[in-house]
Amino acid sequence: MLVGLPRSTATRTPRIPAAGPVLVPANKLDILERARILAVVNSPRFVDLPPIRIYAQLLDEGVYLASISTIYRVLAQNKQVKERRRLARHPARAIPELVATAPGQVFTWDITKLAGPITGKYFDCYVMIDIFSRYIVGAKVHPAESAILAAEMMTETFGIHGTPQVVHADRGTSMTSKTVAALLSDLEVTKSHSRPRVSNDNPYSEAWFKTLKFAPVFRERFASLGDARRFMDAFVEGYIHTHRHTDIGLNTPADVHYGLAAGKAAERSATLAEARARNPERFSTSLDPKILATPDAAWINKPVEAQEDEPKIAA
Image 1 (tube, rainbow, N blue to C red):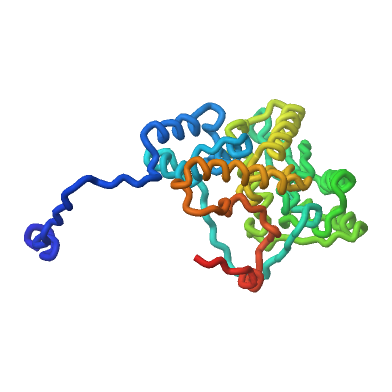
Image 2: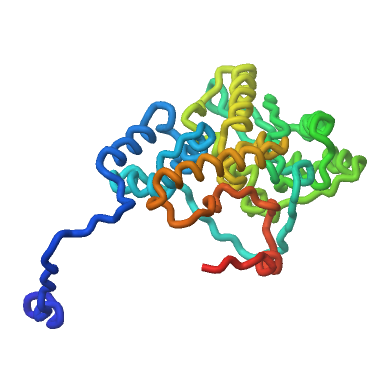
């Protein structure tokens, strides 16, 4: 240890590499293919999208660039992969457990602040989401938070998309108001609330607000109420029709909400089959990636017994 190394390390005999040529895997990408992947993901069209959404979008256009893991690996080798999300831990309490097996069953809603033209001025954005399809069924921007405005949004939303079985929200003032409670009671809709100070109990709304505010097009301030409304209308329209969501098989919310996902799945499968036929050595299985499968249910706090009842997939 006098030289700062363990005796086993100092006395270890170096391994002499075997003579002969180094075998290159048959499915290894060459330099040009790696360069093409970087060029595509860094192009103006895709530079703000993660690899899984680029993969899905190209697949919908009949183009197979590489597997999702390969795109991530190429980006990692070029130091272009970074995780920004933060994780939280919460104490165990009575947990709301909700499940939707089709669109129109469970809606979740919340309100977020949009900064106005000057410091201290904010607009309130009310957003309601169908948890099965991730479709934004209602989105309104108002100058203030109000239980009456919340009830008006719900009435309009239910008139367009139907009355759900359950409406879930956190414990904000408008969410727990008598006005909203009376409306839901009259419509025979079950009212559900998050645990106090536990944002994970309203994951769909919180995740969507993060998607909104981390988007490159999101503004730090809005010049007026009309400006904020125009922005939200455009953003929501783009989201429901172009955003390939990880948890719904990389489909768009509109495709799942209106029953178009099955047709998309068939088209994607055909594109993958063609790619496998061209380069079979680059595929380890004839099955389509699991990430392209649309789940049968969407949960808020899935109970342990339901997780145990899921079929186990052999390794």
